Image (cartoon, rainbow, N blue to C red):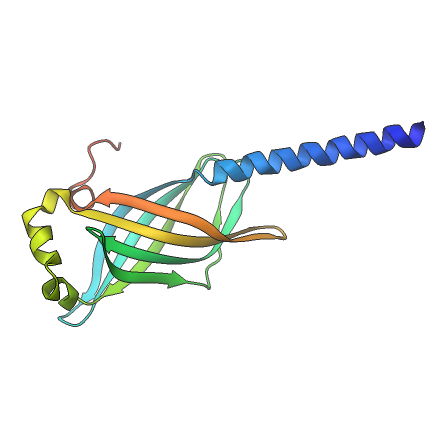
Length: 167
């Protein structure tokens, strides 16, 4: 009888820990990611390099580490750049703490002229959609998730002139 109670207690504890971590993983899936700033680092007719500053808010109670990402940058639905980094070790503190993460994107301005993307941006400047889509790799202790989905959307005008909805 005593062994059965010990087994039941250990099983209940293990189940409780499992449920806690599963709940925290669901909260981690709802990270708040916002674009703080976009800067042109270097540019010429063949290549433009952007620095995209983001703020990530981790509302989970679990700290975790961002170890890499594989993202695509879209302007008005057209892919213009690939953003990758597989050698990252950026710790994201939990309990609503914010972390600043920088992404570098390189693209050819020629693709804006070859397609009508530049005309669309100039005509609809305040409604130009920017989207960053892909996956990120995160780890916590011995656990690692390689396909954490990332989907950030914003308007070009929000980055250039700020978003009135933010503080």
